[in-house]
Length: 324
Ligand code: UT7
Image (cartoon, rainbow, N blue to C red; front, side, top):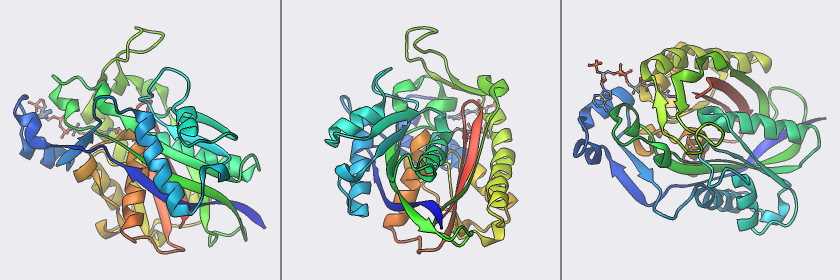
């Protein structure tokens, strides 16, 4: 018997306010046409005043628990991937824990920017495999609208707010690639590229939250190559090939990156979950949002081989391969 971490529930939450590209064209030198053709983004959601990352995360968590048929008391750990916490500390995860009324377990945040959910999922898998926890709530939640420079057209049109969550549960498998659950993960960072995508403020440096800065063209160049390589890395660890994939659920940053990566892996776009048109880039929330939307549409069948992959600031990137 091999212990496996299986996704038994997904949920998501999007703030009510939908912002179409046309809203940016009214105040910036940009067009709907440019945003759609360069990124695939048509609209995104922005959190309301007084609505915070922990609120989004809690909504998504409740939805995932409901779909899993569990209550907060069943959960051993809460892991939130975010780069936009409500407070410098405590962790958003502890706020979610309290909001859910949990009186036990442990909770912490993971910060790997857009790759955060993949890093969090790999870590939660490790905690389940080691016996530290049996059920883990893994959440990606962001309010990137709070770190935008609204005068910078090259970044502010790209990002959105939202949250997605999954419930991971320990189950016994046979130890083969046919098992349900997480089969392999592949994580990387290269801090030499930290200036390509960063926030120009922070607690220790400036005492401010700062604004996001990105050399988009350079990040793009790294993205397709590194995402295809990490996808192959995760597949190789499980002894599987890209041809065996039923679904890719990529980080939703740019439709051209999503297409380019699928093409490098030799996969048709009908195997790729795409939500970037409706959500924009929600950083660590993008993969669990896409997973939850696709699951709610009934797109995954039990036994489907699903690959998630992401890249973001750091640079940090990685992939998690799982069987639904
Ligand atoms: O989630 C973390 C990972 N992040 C990413 O994966 C993002 C990766 N990068 C990208 O998605 C793309 O690079 C962007 C969507 C950010 C930009 O697309 P691009 O095709 O790489 O455009 P570019 O940066 O090369 O800019 C092309 C032109 C520039 O004008 P010039 O220099 O050619 O005259 C920009 O100034 O487009 C201009 N531009 C805009 N024009 C209209 C930049 N932003 C805008 C805008 N509206 N909003």
